[in-house]
Amino acid sequence: MFKIKSEAQFDMAHYLSGYKGKCSNIHGHRYRLIVKLKSETLHADGQLRGMVDDFSNFKNSLKEIEEIFDHKLILEDNEEGKALAKKLADLPNDFDIYFVNYRPTAEEMSRDIFNRLKEKGLSVCEVELFETPNNSCIYTED
Ligand SMILES: [Zn+2]
Image (cartoon, rainbow, N blue to C red; front, side, top):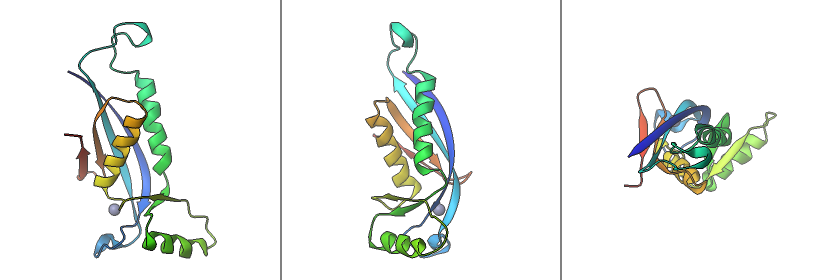
């Protein structure tokens, strides 16, 4: 089994609707995303001969993920998220809000990122998303 690994980072703010405690405020993290692709065999010919995948292709896909979330405020697409977005829209700043259909925890985000990469055709086997230097979620399909 071959596995290749690449990494990206992004800054993101989120709001956890329905959460009580320190993290109930809108707050941000420097997320560190580590993705692994796997393959039993290497490409036998052509441009990708001897490779699981082209690292530049892999890195470009991570860059696309990074661009979705970087410097955005991530809100859940529910009543509370929409109400918050509406209040922020009254302020002079242009808030860059990105809605997701889940509570934006490291767990849900790592699954979402896994599925986005899989849909692009990457042979993704593991997504690890660090929310802080010490805390991460690892998502795999097994
Ligand atoms: Zn947080």
